Image (tube, rainbow over all chains, first blue to last red; front, side, top):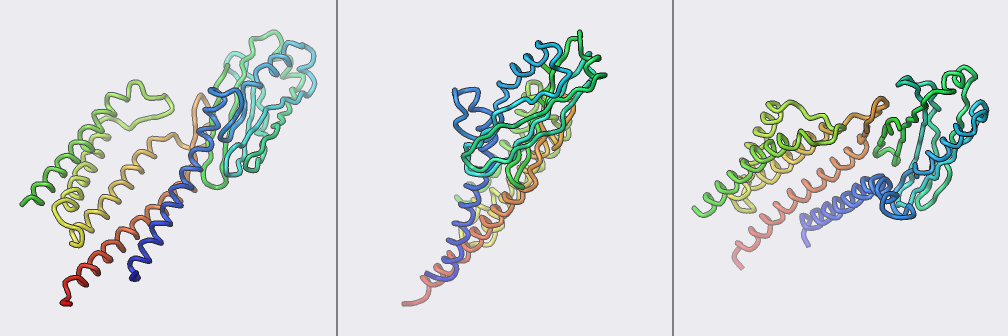
Length: 160
Length: 146
């Protein structure tokens, strides 16, 4: 085997490895966003199970006086993928299109193939409670999925 | 003569696909594409893709009009790689910018990922160049009298 052959096979092995790594990086958040829609468990990828968010927020508002006290909302976070992931979420409330309250972004760092609970503390001031009470409140949020230094996806969840 | 014809046919094919079919598809798709993606104006899309189509046509001609081991073939291969990078760069420009926090949207910051992709492309170029010289080296070896 001459030196050109040795070099070319090393380069070929290198770019095949890089291609696989790129594929792994890109697929994690994509699968994380897709699998909760199609499977009963979060079987693949990295993400947050946002389906648990709405009942907790609804319960907070339906219990009336409890919105005046700080409440912790728990969102299941999962990382069923080969790379560590950092997941973040911020939730907010708006009345007539104006944002009344927005939590800071709470984050959780998950090792490969691990899961956890992302805790978000909602603490409304008395003036914010006064603005919200008796009004039609819309929820909003921002989700952040980060895989190391490779890529960060920020999703505005809109209002609903 | 066969090589020249093959080069011309593949060059025309590449020009039609990249320079005409791609912008036509984008024109058709622009009305129902996700609101996350903001496309550049149609004349600008045509200008960019026609230019890329012409470039891909040239590289396709060099790759098919010449044989492996000839320098124009190598320039064609490397040029095609550069053209692909330009096409990917254009496609990445269509992605929404990172850090979107207002309205319904998605932000993507893929700087680290792009660096990794570029490193992969550099390695694949290295392979093409070394393969080219390996081929010439072996061809010259075979031509030497036994």
